[in-house]
Image 1 (cartoon, rainbow, N blue to C red):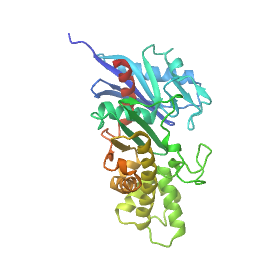
Image 2 (cartoon, rainbow, N blue to C red; image 1 turned 180 degrees about the vertical axis):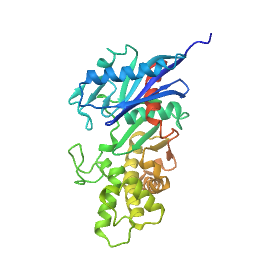
Image 3 (cartoon, rainbow, N blue to C red; image 1 turned 45 degrees about the vertical axis):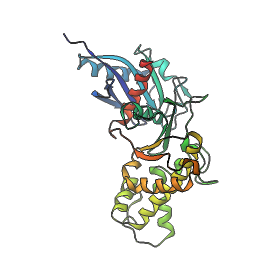
Image 4 (cartoon, rainbow, N blue to C red; image 1 turned 90 degrees about the vertical axis):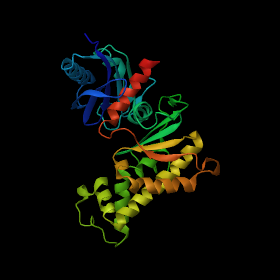
Amino acid sequence: MNPRRAVVAGIDLGGTNTVFGLIDGAGRCHATGRLATDSHQELSVYLQRLAAAIRHCLADRPDLRLQGIGIGAPNGNYTRGTIEHPPNLHWKGIVPFVAEFKKHVPLPMALTNDANAAALGEMRFGAARDLTDFLVITLGTGLGSGIVSHGRLVYGATGFAGELGHTIAVRNGRRCGCGRRGCLETYASATGLRRTFLELLSRTDTASDLRAAAPADITAAAIARAARDGDAVAIRAFRRTGEILGRQLADSVAHTSPAAIFLLGGLAQAGELIFAPTRRSLAKNLLPVFQGTVDIRPSGLPPESAAILGAAALIWEELDR
């Protein structure tokens, strides 16, 4: 009789849905599941539902043996196993997620923010398997980041190191959800691209296919489609976004000297529309000593499963120590 295959549950906790996968040590996904996050509920009720969903998934796969659970979550603190003041969840304050979840599933468990999880996924299963020093930048509704140095994720003294999205890109610039002005994520994100496009649209009479579109239809994906079709305003919006992102990444290179910077997330799916201006700006703003030492690359993780692979990599790293 063949022994059961060891897997972990990689959980991506989003504001709307929670998605998980049962992932083996080679990064193969053997089963997936999802449930509505519904953080209006008491945490204990949500965790009961999540534990039941994982058990249900395992019941259909008796050939699998669950070894541990990794969680990627907004404002996840690896050091404490907590979710702290999450902006898009209704649980408030410091949420003791790991301690409470272990009451339902008594297995090794680790939690971090979703961008840190993506960095670990890139290192274990993606395009950074041969690297020890790199950055991962997630370009979605906001901007997340993970820093890997000497083969280890950088957490810092608080567990929150690597918040590049909340470095100041434009002094006294756009209001950010964190309460400050000019944070990088207000410019270099899907939301930031949209704001830049709308600003450019209001300041010029240049023709644009999106000028007559309803505001709700002007999304980052729609702007990317317009740019590919030659829309001058959309192309300018991408250039401006890449200029700001590349300039900030040049500062990050001075801090950490990575061999590569990986971009992933919805905005990264625009390909060279965002990669090309970001690379140009990075090169323009790098200190001479760093010229030619770092490049910007696409993620090696499948976009549809990057989040759960990252969360799985987090707990596999723990189990391997």
